[in-house]
Length: 196
Figure 1 (cartoon, rainbow, N blue to C red):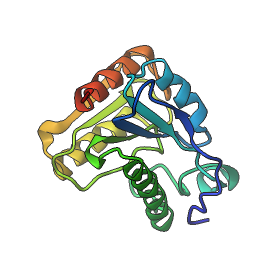
Figure 2: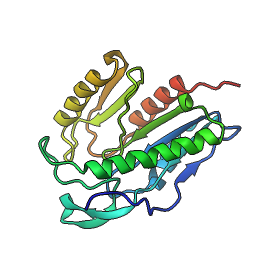
Figure 3: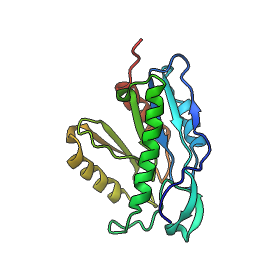
């Protein structure tokens, strides 16, 4: 199945503790929801940042024997030469753009919005000056470290290579850990300092 009908529930949101002057939009991985990531961000939040964790629509995923699960787009295979669901990826990007547009309408400038994600969730950008933090567990059995390294090298050809930070975490599998979340907090706080 191609496409993304975005028939998903409203995003899980961690509101800013005071007036929101920045936002983080974070996409979960395959089969997950935004709830767990909202809880994780609640644990590292900065008071002026709104954290938005949307939920992917449920759709059949070719890689998983067409089982229906939350997914931003279809995944056909995991090898570097696997076909990609270009239509679904483009639709997911449009859905993310709609979230960004809504936050801009809410008064948050687009340069104060960070996009992030886990596994299937990361979103690419076209602005060569964007900063990227890519994190990867060295024991990830689903997305091998080699793929993470290849992705980091590819990102360096698309944006200013000095703006790409690739961190690995010893012993971490296809998950997150406290040190990674602290690195994410430091990255976010550096890019989105309080302005009032």
